[in-house]
Length: 282
Length: 253
Image (cartoon, rainbow over all chains, first blue to last red; front, side, top):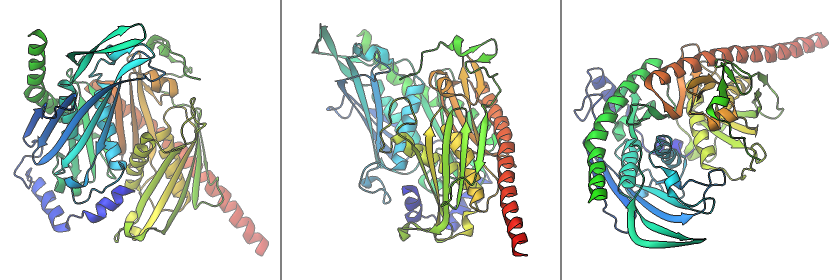
């Protein structure tokens, strides 16, 4: 219901929409990119010292910050030997004229759940290693995303921020004496098994735009997000919005998502993984 | 109460699934149209052990008015599960899952409706899951599009929906609750069958590119089967209406 309100206050003129569509027929975009070209990505980690892990991501002008807080808590009854991870997203009013104060609405909930799905389904974190006392005490990781500047494609920016923050998260080592858990001064990196990469398209005028800007999102019929893992498997997918996709759109998007996923992983996440390893051995 | 922990081998052995179906087989589906008296349109679906009621109100006046679109109706969807519809009692407060599903279901139905015919108004779709058995969002969409048709809302096509899961490395059509929870992947898909346009697509789990494309094909075929059942259910409803109408005419004469 909130989305309807957002759409109304955030209109794109018909002239602008037609401009986007007519440029696309020549394989071009308003900002000069090709249809399947991403905006520059920068990832900065460890900027919030109070958090166990943090990352700020810029995707063009879009900015998202993620912070990870860890605390000891109870496991879910059906998974007594596993740690818990939860994602939450806040579309705060400083990031856009159409975001409002108040509890998360549909858009924010969908965003957080799609980011969460990529991390969970890729089995990025070995949650079994976050168990302290089975059935009693496990590490609970809160990944909180704050959108700082919404210039489009919050799904990918948020996903990169969450993944980078988790890759650099350090939680205290613990010692278990019977039922007593003693928190140590030493810290350890999280047990990481995977690096999921999210790639999002907007479908505008029958064409797929990789990494859409806010104007391209306003003009879109629907959004399509694909998350892949290191072995090029698909681990999460979300079509979002009121439009349609054809079978051809899906296979086209899949090819691009796998290729761009590899690029992002190699260029932005592997360096973080390397410095983790260096730290673990040093 | 919770589900037994089957191994992947137990879930799919010798081409047979735990409920006795083959990999490419839908669960039994029962569809009824026009089941509620006060709603403008309604439908009921049973798919396996899923039991779901859908009511449609509208097109009608929208409150608060500032939400209205000057050029089209808005579509509002509310997906809710009854507290007793699942093994562990669900809290009656709307969960994050219910809010997300309401949103994706709206996205699945909206492309089929001529919303521009009804500016400044709303079409409201209320979905109540009475018993859940895996694949509720798909069953809800299948029933909701029938309820919209029953309400006389002009549509480009019906929307049929169906999921594909993966158990023991095999893709299976229309996974049940156990296959959904213990399986290796779940991919719900909704389709406007006449032009094969996809209006909902989600996936969680792990599939290779080839598996994903094959899963799409399987789901589309499943939707085509469901589409036939939808049309039958609508025709059945229409026959009842026609009988009532013609019967009434004779009395008048």
